Image 1 (cartoon, rainbow, N blue to C red):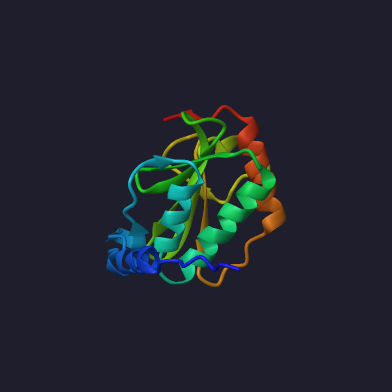
Image 2 (cartoon, one colour):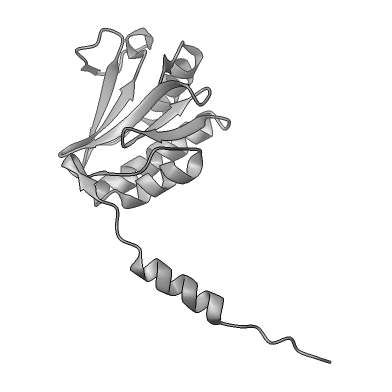
Length: 155
């Protein structure tokens, strides 16, 4: 019986390039600077680059959004994960602020009950999640489903 030899060179090269990969640049509030892109991969790269406790919050938000809407369209635009019905129409996103994670519902003024934080834009409402806050997942999923049924913002 012949045993095929496998080369370890590709694995070593992959490890070297991974070790040389620079961490993503962090902008104000710990917001990672991630290149614009569509699909799950850029969103996951964004989440993995978030420092500290905010990474866990962002990963949980992404998981809840995906669970509520398995076919949700994802993108990173303006260093922000965006969620929509297609590659041009988005209904929500989230962003890192120094002391909290800011979840934006672009048609949030039409959600029941209203997300708690107002915006200078009439239709937009926010949910600010601080480090020790407990997220009401049932309410959050309800907002995600409601938001996805409304006209999103063309971006």
